[in-house]
Length: 279
Image 1 (cartoon, one colour):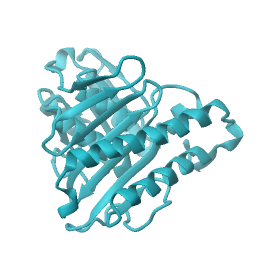
Image 2 (cartoon, helix red, strand yellow):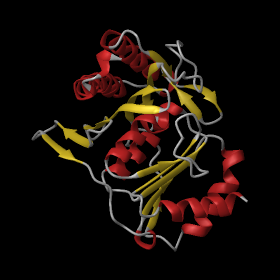
Image 3 (cartoon, helix red, strand yellow):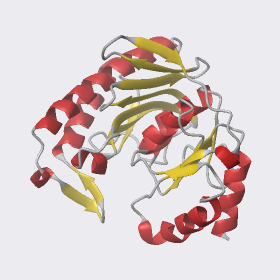
Image 4 (cartoon, one colour):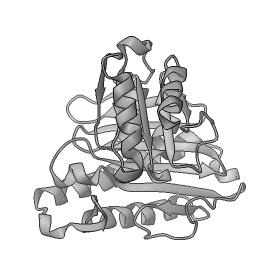
């Protein structure tokens, strides 16, 4: 994979692609109508904006790295199916608009998420949060970074927090598969509410992960999510010094549907609680 040696160069190119998609989404939000919304499943929505953003991203990524395949949420590129990544295959994992329900309601955050995956290794992760104009990015071995261009341009290195569980601010998301997950989320809230600093839900898996990487959240957990939801953000957390596993505690999480991401200090606490409520 000679073309992938300079991961930093490719990462910065992906940041610009994510920003272009974000600009498109921002412009369409100004004239967006609820009549444009389609329902994929119960409480799981999509619109022409998701699809338009995905086409823009896919076309740009094909030019950047023609040999790579794709895993995309809206299915505009189908060279690789979710869960069928061969060890030698390099593919982009794209969520063109993470937090569609937030977007529909004009409720921040919502983001563009792009990752480059080789087998089970995440090489590049970029998440662009549209409302705050924050671009979170990382490449393998290069650390995690945040760039903001609105107003005074700034670029900072990200590090996870050092909070312990009793003071932790946690994000416990509410996935669309409510029937299967309702007993788990009820158990988690019952066990954690009043025993941690506080609990939030932000409506975007990609952004929950980035908030952990930035030290704004101390931990995040969610199940029944797609690879496009968590792939980019997971690398950003790990490069910021955090820990990412699936709900069973395995670090081999890239082919699954669950993520637990923390500052590392509270990982065992959160996994123990999940194991307890799932019994």
